Image (cartoon, rainbow, N blue to C red; front, side, top):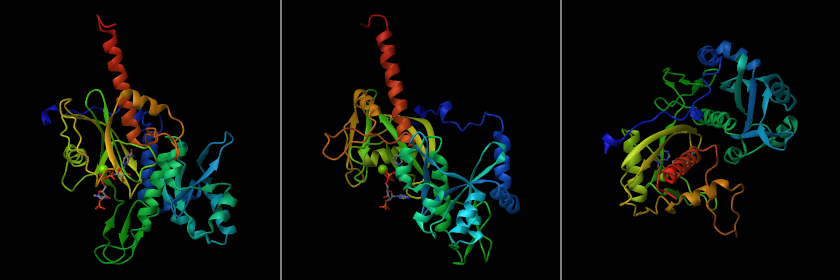
Length: 349
Ligand SMILES: NC(=O)C1=CN([C@@H]2O[C@H](COP(=O)(O)OP(=O)(O)OC[C@H]3O[C@@H](n4cnc5c(N)ncnc54)[C@H](OP(=O)(O)O)[C@@H]3O)[C@@H](O)[C@H]2O)C=CC1
Ligand SMILES: [Mg+2]
């Protein structure tokens, strides 16, 4: 099977916008801020902050009635915090997440120690659970909040050194923590997760976990075991969850996913032989898994609102911000192209 594996470059719209001018300078500036606490503090004073409250991001309503992450000037955050009785040191707990044109740095800060409603009123926004937020934001806005939440969560749960039990302390950017007694450096952790859209050439395979929203099915996913390659993890997960053997694997693209504790999702397409498509679903892992036709998927992609209890069960797909959605749209486009090619062949009607 391995000789049949092939790798492709991700499609251009999956790549970060690195070809636009200023990308190299911004990346180098961010790198300097991670290494130089004084420069980072100064960047914080002139930067922007996205606020969180117990890991839920602050969203504001736009004039068009949509929601967007609230990017607040650090000086404004500072005055709000002072008005609410917090001392100025809270702002220093911000973590660096990004950098705009002209090297304006962006940070995230959790103000969970303050009263939620008072901060919402002062900042004219609402703190909303991150899972719900991801469904409402654009694909450009969602990743910065996902990254911010993941970093803030890591700091909240990494206060002690696992070797000495002593307190760890962070650098100003929040990109690392060091043990106060032996200097061991800890970096934020991510778990590699494989996610795959399996096809038999005509249909694609989606699975459903009990915790998914009503009607939702997604591509099969699973955490990589220690020592596994991406391909090995994919083959094992598909064998475990639905009892199929993969024939070929094609890399599509990846995504940072903040749930449950920060994962790097590695997205692939895979095929199985049309002669071996009988599923043996492991119900300890999945509530259900089944093959979906192109027609079922194209109808589901058109749905605008999720099914409600009492509705006839419609297929509901993961949000646009999820790599699962990207895999499903890529497969759909490929199938539609295949159908067009076949219809245009001489002799076809
Ligand atoms: N962005 C996207 O498009 C999508 C993202 N996902 C994400 O992919 C992730 C993995 O998918 P899922 O099907 O649940 O994975 P798995 O099929 O691997 O099953 C999850 C189980 O794996 C065990 N496990 C092994 N290693 C880890 C680890 N490092 N962290 C947590 N659990 C681990 C846990 O079992 P136990 O507790 O018994 O040890 C857990 O309950 C999910 O967190 C989900 O959010 C899934 C689909 C779409
Ligand atoms: Mg799984």
